[in-house]
Length: 141
Image (cartoon, rainbow, N blue to C red; front, side, top):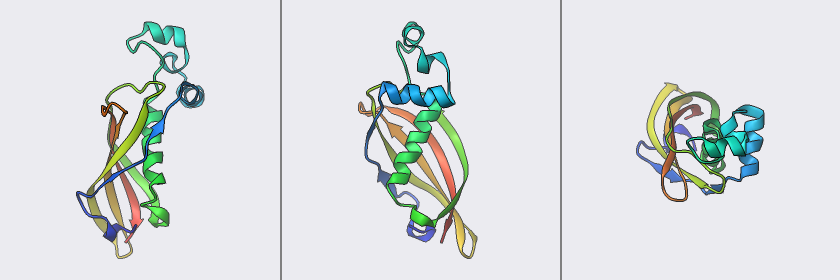
């Protein structure tokens, strides 16, 4: 979709994605090698009572789910910023996540492009919000 096809207040819901312990640990090994993501014994003794996904992993998964909805298609030129990032609740192995996307702002930049900002809110299968963040992209009009 092009910028002019989106409306402020418009809402989309993604499909769900189930996180496994193997995926959590694989991501963490490469991008966030902290004990709460990798060391089961130490994580069990910590405040979360077990392995949890990296917040960065949750954010990346939220973005993936949105992109896979296909609303941007080839009209997006580039991401421009992410703001108000909040890691609200831990994500555990076996959690099934989905993202609700709300269009919160759009601005014309030039005659052929603009900036679209959406709010990504990600929930687990208990309908608890686990992540939230604003994403802005440069997009064709």
